[in-house]
Image 1: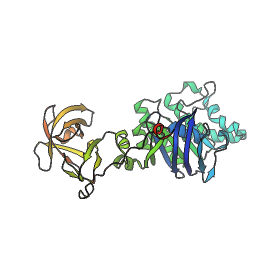
Image 2: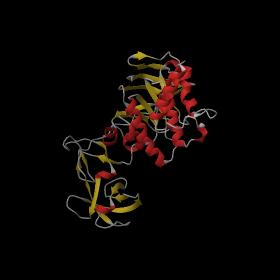
Image 3: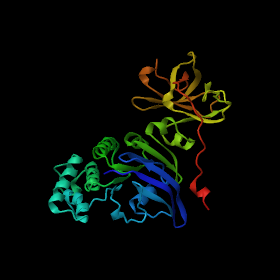
Image 4: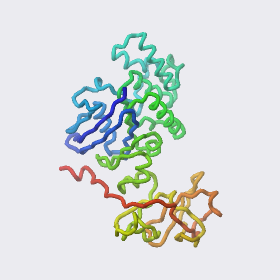
Length: 354
């Protein structure tokens, strides 16, 4: 049975150094939530406190409103997949998957059924007798997942589960992980620094920075409507532009309704700037200063008078009248949609604590 998770005011100091400060997060039962952020942002520490591998200085963790702060790791009913999988190399696949069942004193016949079901779940039903060292990286990742799920935990924790895989296999496993999570309905919290991984798998994404959570939302919300400049920069590519008197002056675009005199910074994603011929109606003219070929798209750097930095523009080659070259003048217009100012970044933890 899946559980809801509540992290309430979690603060962690390790050897006197602040790592987390008043982190709070609500995870609905049966959902897939990812903690996303750069190295050192507090993601893994949060996961370790949930698992019982690290102790909080203050704050609480609750499963279905039941505090688990004082419980040892082996009594929390939590499955954990480590970054390096942590499989036992001297055991067979089946013995690895069976291990948590033996620890829970499950009868032998029942263990055999549960192992077979777990291997079926990860689409590796016929490898039980093989040495775990004979498996590929992707297969080992699935076996680690089968071992974490074989006892039907209330909560599944994933620590950079796909980091050791190459790009193509990692993308395939993103789909596979989400399939397995949906089939089991297990509440899942993952840690990653890979933006594409978080956006493709998650129901909710919590963006962490400097020991705090800067924003929580659906993948679309955190990408399309970032709350702070850090979130805007961290998730994909972003053009951050100054707003004066309610307008992005260089592009002639209103922010909000454009009448409230708003000052600050707004974000425009590269795919929201549409290139066309210079001088086209409704466009501003800029000069192409850089071109990067990305297969299906071109990444253009375009200098526009009044913009503090070259604008990043994502263009589809087939939609352009002719392929641009460095030095060309082109027109740019905004795809449309309301622009909003960004909030201030949350201060770094080390600056906010004594």
